[in-house]
Length: 156
Image 1: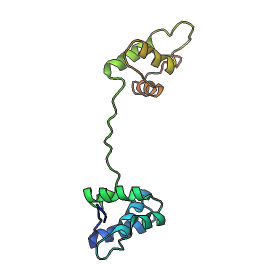
Image 2 (image 1 turned 180 degrees about the vertical axis):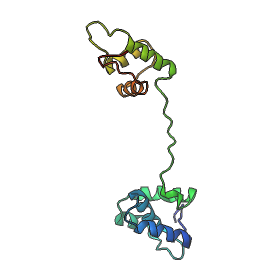
Image 3 (image 1 turned 60 degrees about the vertical axis):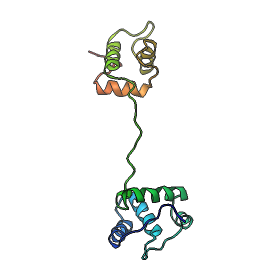
C-alpha cells in the first residue's frame, strides 16, 4: 500500500490531460502531468504502479515517489512546478569585503606583476584575512557588479 496516493478530481484530470497532450509546453510540466495521470487512484484513473510508470516514462521509481509526496503536500496542479529551493547561500564578500576588494584593485599589483589577476586578488583577500576562501568567479562577479575591471588599460 502506497503511503502517498494521488486522487484526481475530474477537473484536475481534464486540466492535466490538456497539459499532457499539448505540443508547446514545458517538458517537465508535461512529464509530471503524464505521471500524475497514470498514478491517479481515483475511480476514473488507471492507478498504475510506480514500476510500470517508470518503465513507460523516462523517470525512476524514486522520482515518482517524490512526486506523489509533493502532490499530497501542494495538490496536483501546483506540483507541476519545481519545489522552491531551501538552500541558503552565504555571501563570501559582504559590503566591507567588497570595499576592500575594490581598494585592492586600485592599488599597485604585487612585485613582478604588471596587473592584478582574479587569482591574485583572491589570494590577497585570503592573505589579508578578509575571507577564509574565495573563488575566482566570486571575484569576477563582484567586480562586474561594481563596474570595476582591474585588467583593463584604464582602471580609473
